[in-house]
Image 1 (cartoon, rainbow over the protein chains, first blue to last red):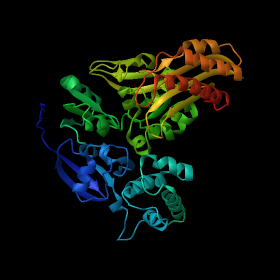
Image 2: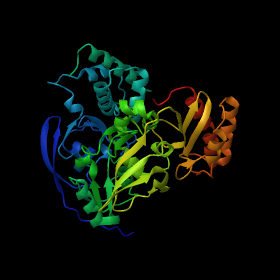
Image 3: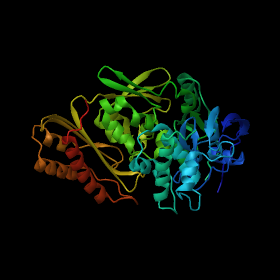
Image 4: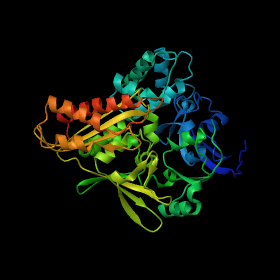
Length: 167
Length: 291
């Protein structure tokens, strides 16, 4: 089979990941998920590589998105938040604590995506109930827990947020 | 998988976008939210040589929901999330919010745009039957002029629209649903999956007397299709259980041969068109109306 190999110049982009600035050269086709992992943000899990599992979810300019469905160049001049950015001074974020306390983790592969989606949900929605949570995490697949404890954890995190324990 | 390489542009203005399109023509693809285009590139179903990213710099100009006269004007780069959560849409054109609610998942709705979805024109896309039922107008811009394309004439075939190769969609104009009852029902195998069949219904009612009806079936055929016989049947009748049953049976008979694929057979889609129309009519009669 004949493959046409197209030579493409790399592009220089600027990113702010968890408040740290980067200026990097990337090929336009470089996926944001790949770039973030190469920069050391290995909380960005690549599960299906296909936009189905949500394990690569990050917050891009205030919105939870799947970083495997974006080119890094699309995130030029953007702010990105990953799980690494949730913790403060080595202390777990209340959302992470809620996951821990409610046994919402088994193998842990889906956890970063679950955290970022629910972080986005909780920061935008005041009325949280089980249905809202379950609908919000339809784009995040978990093959171990059966979701029950994850839903519990997110509801518990909403309580913590109401109680003022949040950043 | 990883996509083939391409050259990337993020134009600052609509005019710059148009001149890039003019220059690269068929080798270029316009990228909006990218929730359909990027997966297709990753699966190497398409390999555009040039990507023109309009979301990057034009999002701020082309993302809005405005009330103008008897209609709402929606910027092409308004995301599904913005449509779903807009108070204006909820109050004046709720059928659109209902359609947006079913699209993909939380993350996809955060990034995907209404303009992108319409131009992609996937037969299973949730907006299509709603937009056609609403008789929306699409404002497109080419090198030298703007023009309006009616939604009823926009969709030409599966993933094919009336948009010229050097034109982009700027704005979607939908009427306010003053006094119209509506219903929107969809079947998908699981949340976030492609729609197998959609029924979008608009009724002008006086109590239960139907003055006019619009029924559009989506997802079953390559482009949304209007159920003209059923509409005529409903007009001038007082709607009750029996009439609704008969009307949904008419949809079953009237629907042109549906698509058959790995997700659903043609027969199943036809059956669902009947069931969904019945549900949509019941929902419409149940009272939730646009203002």
